[in-house]
Image 1 (cartoon, rainbow, N blue to C red):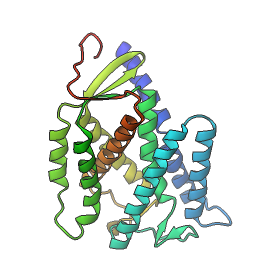
Image 2 (spheres, helix red, strand yellow):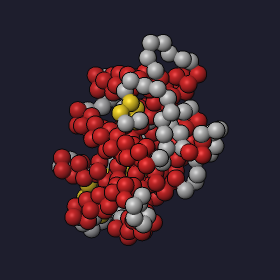
Image 3 (cartoon, rainbow, N blue to C red):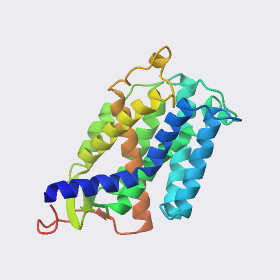
Image 4 (cartoon, rainbow, N blue to C red):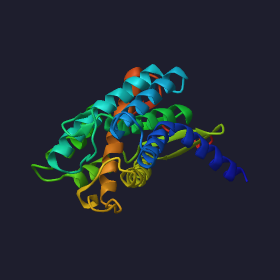
Length: 268
């Protein structure tokens, strides 16, 4: 019974942390079913995302520091979108006044929603990281993962090498989180895989409602290839590493570098 209560509490905290992504998916579904007047769909989606971001800040659901992180991810995601659409990896076939080089500006919020989830979950679950690698290791790794999204179009794709390197670098790193006053821990690499898999599920929902379109979905929607999980996994890793590094820069004590030991009396 206690385990069930903890699962419900954990699920509720996760649901609250996913508020921004849920609004985006709901907006994708509604604007696909119900045509809105005056403006193209992509422009309405941008307005909804901006209003949602403003509302969360005003309601205290997000802090100003979190907004800065989310804005950074919006820009990082938008840069990736501009490049990928240019290379033909996917497309946005609809019309829109807010499209820049074929990319609607609302698309950056889909990346920002991942950052929003990470920031919200970090705060709600009181996340801590133990045995976090040095900055001089983490930063180049994050940069290499992000750059590979661009360079693999011109050079070899080293995503699997980078994934292996992530396992080596973060082999001893643990995520500590709190549910109902009880602390738990899990390997950081496992959390990467879980988040990446659920984002792949979300991607299938997004493409079903026409958020964007892969070449094989031009004639009819089909399941996004399972291989895309690796792409989202690496994107999650980049997102997590950036948030963790920013937390460390802020000096809030939630990231412990070195070989700090845990006691079994404290953690499950």
